[in-house]
Image (cartoon, rainbow, N blue to C red):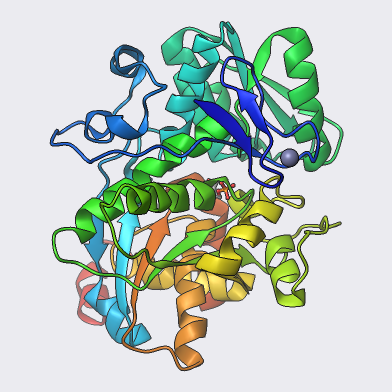
Length: 396
Ligand SMILES: *Cc1c(COP(=O)(O)O)cnc(C)c1O
Ligand SMILES: [Zn+2]
């Protein structure tokens, strides 16, 4: 098997720690494989045909139980939006986001290459996920963050005893330098669109396809998009299933970004092939605020054929987050972009379509967003005395 450049097609040996193309600097991906979905309770066993390069024994040793997340149909959201809404609830992963699926495969890759140290560049879900799996695997783990990281975000990372370093630089620069310095210092950086992280994300696509094979159908998969790694992984799963003859048709994809940091959506609107870095990203959807998405150009290439890109505002995101919480599902702003995008589409003539939203991460990690959401609604806590409790309840 080989690693292949997503842009120029140059190939690289699987034995080297290659992550991006030496010629065009675009992301590499693992050569497509064919296979069948098997019968098993365990995710990695069911889809093992599509992971011939991964040791099942290491999966057994290092898995924390990622995947097997439910698809939930929301009648309330379907009624409100005039389209059928299914929710793939990725908040139910070991560290409360889909990142765990990719982290496991990335960590196994690092171990196979002989690394004893791993790292990542992230302020949020990926940092927590890498810290958790690094701890489980007994690897020394380094997390690079920008120096303006809010204190609230530090604790869910360092709780796993990883080594967190604040770096005074732009996010994109830290990403680029980490890949170079990592190779010199013996740290395998499992960043947002590492080829093996993307492989792990394929399981979301396989699970959706399995669910569809029971008679469900969808027109669109809606994916919150920052670096582009997640979208690439889900789409790759569908493409592999199609070339394996398991599926005849694949759904369209909608990548959603936040208006305050939407380099991929901007390039898509302009019809250009390359993204431009966003100078001052500003959005409540921190988990997708990647000012220079390392897989942005590849997302543009892929969606020319397989879908489209949209952007939604913070106000729309907070309202969508509230709509989801009224259906009993508490996601972070990044994940709520999916519902905000469908709301926009429904106002522009889409109706009766079937959408599956990937709800990427749990709301409990970003409580400051709830404060913003409640501010919009003028929320305040009701107070009373024991004597007046009865009348307070009556008037409620
Ligand atoms: C990482 C993340 C995304 C975006 O994934 P990319 O692979 O960077 O495109 C979306 N939502 C949440 C909650 C995330 O943590
Ligand atoms: Zn290339």
